[in-house]
Amino acid sequence: GAVVSQHPSWVICKSGTSVKIECRSLDFQATTMFWYRQFPKQSLMLMATSNEGSKATYEQGVEKDKFLINHASLTLSTLTVTSAHPEDSSFYICSARDPRDYTDTQYFGPGTRLTVL
Amino acid sequence: GDSVTQMEGPVTLSEEAFLTINCTYTATGYPSLFWYVQYPGEGLQLLLKATKADDKGSNKGFEATYRKETTSFHLEKGSVQVSDSAVYFCALIDGSGNTGKLIFGQGTTLQVKP
Image (cartoon, rainbow over all chains, first blue to last red; front, side, top):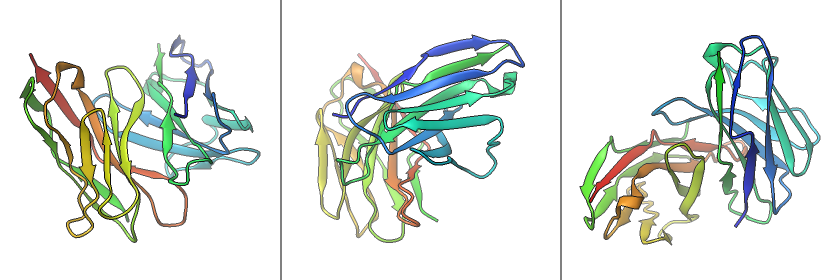
């Protein structure tokens, strides 16, 4: 099946610094990737849709200047949390659509735990 | 807009018990339906899916049937194990605007006791 990886799996940073999270599709080329945020004991909240070679589409209420998304290649999308603050601490999960799968199934990465001190 | 509703959790069962987690949906058209499972501290894993009415998705002993008449996609397993303890999410593909977005239910926590 389609495999998606994320790096790092966890990160701790100081308030005011920026953090970059990578999402890679390992065995397929993903023209579309998605970024989610998950709070404890809650469902996933879609932050943005990342399309290779074009600007990301952000969901309402998500600050695009704070959560920078770059999808520079067919196997890599990055999420940069700029000037992070403690309220940005969360579990960030990416997913990718495998274009070989006509059902539009999304395959998820293992997630990145961000803690901002 | 499209939406997914799951039964409230947590669901607590003894090992080898029968599992049902209810999921109903509201959608325009005929969306693809999914069950994902999330183990503690991990991302989501696709458990099973169904793309049209009356399709049955199955994997690892879990099953769910796409019921158009009742707009439901209930998850079942005949005999649960302790290792099945996780959070289960029902989801559908948003059929409006062809965005490919997933609409998730709120998740149901399953706890299986030995």
